[in-house]
Length: 178
Image (cartoon, rainbow, N blue to C red):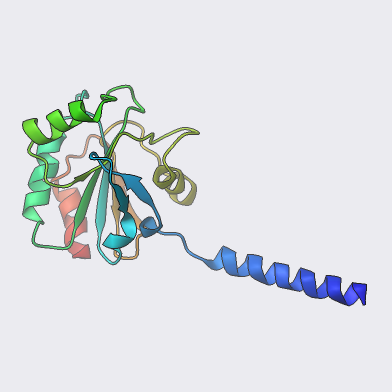
Protein backbone atom coordinates (compact mmCIF):
# COMPACT_ATOMS: atom_id res chain seq x y z
CA UNK A 1 0.00 0.00 0.00
CA UNK A 2 2.79 2.42 0.89
CA UNK A 3 4.52 1.66 -2.39
CA UNK A 4 1.35 2.48 -4.40
CA UNK A 5 0.89 5.73 -2.47
CA UNK A 6 4.52 6.68 -3.06
CA UNK A 7 4.22 5.84 -6.74
CA UNK A 8 1.06 7.93 -7.15
CA UNK A 9 2.69 10.79 -5.23
CA UNK A 10 5.79 10.73 -7.46
CA UNK A 11 3.68 10.62 -10.62
CA UNK A 12 1.61 13.61 -9.44
CA UNK A 13 4.73 15.54 -8.48
CA UNK A 14 6.29 14.86 -11.87
CA UNK A 15 3.09 15.94 -13.64
CA UNK A 16 2.97 19.18 -11.64
CA UNK A 17 6.61 19.96 -12.45
CA UNK A 18 6.03 19.20 -16.13
CA UNK A 19 3.03 21.54 -16.25
CA UNK A 20 4.95 24.30 -14.50
CA UNK A 21 7.90 23.88 -16.85
CA UNK A 22 5.57 24.33 -19.82
CA UNK A 23 4.29 27.68 -18.58
CA UNK A 24 5.87 30.31 -20.77
CA UNK A 25 7.05 33.41 -19.01
CA UNK A 26 6.77 36.60 -21.01
CA UNK A 27 7.26 40.31 -20.48
CA UNK A 28 3.67 40.79 -19.30
CA UNK A 29 4.37 38.67 -16.20
CA UNK A 30 6.48 41.44 -14.63
CA UNK A 31 5.89 44.72 -12.85
CA UNK A 32 7.93 47.67 -11.64
CA UNK A 33 7.58 50.97 -9.83
CA UNK A 34 7.19 54.05 -12.00
CA UNK A 35 8.93 57.37 -11.44
CA UNK A 36 6.02 58.51 -9.24
CA UNK A 37 6.15 55.41 -7.03
CA UNK A 38 3.10 53.70 -8.59
CA UNK A 39 3.14 49.99 -9.35
CA UNK A 40 3.03 49.25 -13.10
CA UNK A 41 1.88 45.74 -13.98
CA UNK A 42 3.01 44.98 -17.50
CA UNK A 43 0.00 42.72 -17.99
CA UNK A 44 -1.93 45.90 -18.82
CA UNK A 45 0.13 46.03 -22.05
CA UNK A 46 -0.63 42.39 -22.92
CA UNK A 47 -0.98 42.01 -26.68
CA UNK A 48 0.93 45.20 -27.43
CA UNK A 49 4.49 45.57 -28.69
CA UNK A 50 6.78 47.08 -26.06
CA UNK A 51 10.13 48.84 -26.38
CA UNK A 52 12.14 48.90 -23.14
CA UNK A 53 15.22 51.10 -22.84
CA UNK A 54 17.51 51.25 -19.81
CA UNK A 55 18.30 54.92 -19.32
CA UNK A 56 20.44 57.26 -17.23
CA UNK A 57 20.35 61.03 -16.81
CA UNK A 58 24.09 61.70 -16.61
CA UNK A 59 25.33 59.69 -19.58
CA UNK A 60 26.77 60.65 -22.94
CA UNK A 61 23.74 58.91 -24.49
CA UNK A 62 21.20 60.89 -22.40
CA UNK A 63 20.27 63.03 -25.46
CA UNK A 64 18.65 59.85 -26.80
CA UNK A 65 15.73 60.79 -24.54
CA UNK A 66 14.83 63.29 -27.30
CA UNK A 67 14.90 60.47 -29.87
CA UNK A 68 12.76 58.29 -27.60
CA UNK A 69 10.26 61.12 -27.23
CA UNK A 70 10.20 61.54 -31.04
CA UNK A 71 9.56 57.82 -31.38
CA UNK A 72 6.80 58.08 -28.78
CA UNK A 73 5.16 60.95 -30.69
CA UNK A 74 5.50 59.19 -34.05
CA UNK A 75 3.80 56.06 -32.71
CA UNK A 76 1.39 57.59 -30.19
CA UNK A 77 -1.63 56.61 -32.30
CA UNK A 78 -0.47 52.98 -32.45
CA UNK A 79 -0.44 50.47 -29.63
CA UNK A 80 3.34 50.57 -29.18
CA UNK A 81 4.34 51.08 -25.55
CA UNK A 82 7.69 52.68 -24.71
CA UNK A 83 9.17 52.19 -21.25
CA UNK A 84 12.33 53.85 -19.96
CA UNK A 85 13.83 51.95 -17.04
CA UNK A 86 16.08 54.38 -15.22
CA UNK A 87 19.15 52.77 -13.72
CA UNK A 88 22.30 53.60 -11.84
CA UNK A 89 23.88 50.25 -12.73
CA UNK A 90 26.56 52.12 -14.67
CA UNK A 91 26.88 54.91 -12.07
CA UNK A 92 25.33 57.58 -14.27
CA UNK A 93 21.84 58.05 -12.83
CA UNK A 94 20.58 60.20 -10.01
CA UNK A 95 19.29 58.28 -7.01
CA UNK A 96 16.60 60.85 -6.24
CA UNK A 97 13.56 60.47 -8.51
CA UNK A 98 12.94 64.24 -8.38
CA UNK A 99 16.32 64.81 -10.05
CA UNK A 100 15.46 62.21 -12.70
CA UNK A 101 12.06 63.83 -13.29
CA UNK A 102 13.82 67.16 -13.83
CA UNK A 103 15.85 65.64 -16.67
CA UNK A 104 13.03 63.57 -18.17
CA UNK A 105 10.12 65.95 -17.88
CA UNK A 106 11.64 69.42 -17.94
CA UNK A 107 14.61 68.90 -20.24
CA UNK A 108 13.08 66.34 -22.63
CA UNK A 109 9.29 66.56 -22.10
CA UNK A 110 8.98 62.78 -21.81
CA UNK A 111 5.48 61.40 -22.34
CA UNK A 112 6.19 57.67 -22.12
CA UNK A 113 6.31 55.40 -19.07
CA UNK A 114 9.42 55.89 -16.92
CA UNK A 115 10.47 53.73 -13.99
CA UNK A 116 12.02 54.53 -10.65
CA UNK A 117 15.70 53.56 -10.64
CA UNK A 118 16.34 49.81 -10.89
CA UNK A 119 19.35 47.59 -11.35
CA UNK A 120 19.67 46.22 -14.87
CA UNK A 121 22.64 43.92 -14.34
CA UNK A 122 24.28 41.77 -11.71
CA UNK A 123 22.85 39.79 -8.83
CA UNK A 124 20.43 42.60 -7.91
CA UNK A 125 19.07 43.03 -11.43
CA UNK A 126 15.36 43.74 -11.60
CA UNK A 127 13.41 40.55 -12.46
CA UNK A 128 12.69 41.88 -15.97
CA UNK A 129 16.40 42.17 -16.73
CA UNK A 130 17.25 38.91 -14.95
CA UNK A 131 14.64 37.18 -17.15
CA UNK A 132 15.98 38.81 -20.34
CA UNK A 133 19.46 37.57 -19.47
CA UNK A 134 18.32 34.08 -18.50
CA UNK A 135 15.84 33.59 -21.32
CA UNK A 136 17.62 35.38 -24.17
CA UNK A 137 21.25 35.63 -23.00
CA UNK A 138 21.02 39.40 -23.42
CA UNK A 139 22.04 42.07 -20.94
CA UNK A 140 22.77 45.75 -21.25
CA UNK A 141 26.45 46.52 -21.52
CA UNK A 142 25.78 50.23 -21.01
CA UNK A 143 22.95 52.74 -20.72
CA UNK A 144 20.37 53.09 -23.49
CA UNK A 145 20.25 49.46 -24.59
CA UNK A 146 16.96 48.85 -26.34
CA UNK A 147 14.75 45.73 -26.21
CA UNK A 148 11.76 45.25 -28.50
CA UNK A 149 9.07 42.74 -27.50
CA UNK A 150 6.32 41.40 -29.73
CA UNK A 151 2.61 41.16 -28.93
CA UNK A 152 3.27 37.88 -27.10
CA UNK A 153 5.78 39.51 -24.74
CA UNK A 154 8.76 37.76 -26.32
CA UNK A 155 11.99 39.55 -27.20
CA UNK A 156 12.36 40.07 -30.92
CA UNK A 157 15.47 42.21 -31.18
CA UNK A 158 17.82 44.32 -29.11
CA UNK A 159 20.14 47.18 -29.95
CA UNK A 160 23.13 48.74 -28.25
CA UNK A 161 23.54 52.30 -27.03
CA UNK A 162 24.98 53.26 -30.41
CA UNK A 163 21.65 52.73 -32.19
CA UNK A 164 19.38 55.73 -31.77
CA UNK A 165 15.82 54.90 -30.68
CA UNK A 166 14.27 56.43 -33.81
CA UNK A 167 16.70 54.82 -36.26
CA UNK A 168 15.28 52.88 -39.20
CA UNK A 169 16.76 49.69 -37.72
CA UNK A 170 14.31 50.03 -34.85
CA UNK A 171 11.36 51.65 -36.65
CA UNK A 172 11.38 48.97 -39.34
CA UNK A 173 11.03 46.30 -36.66
CA UNK A 174 8.29 48.28 -34.90
CA UNK A 175 6.40 48.72 -38.18
CA UNK A 176 6.39 44.94 -38.66
CA UNK A 177 4.79 44.53 -35.24
CA UNK A 178 2.05 47.15 -35.41
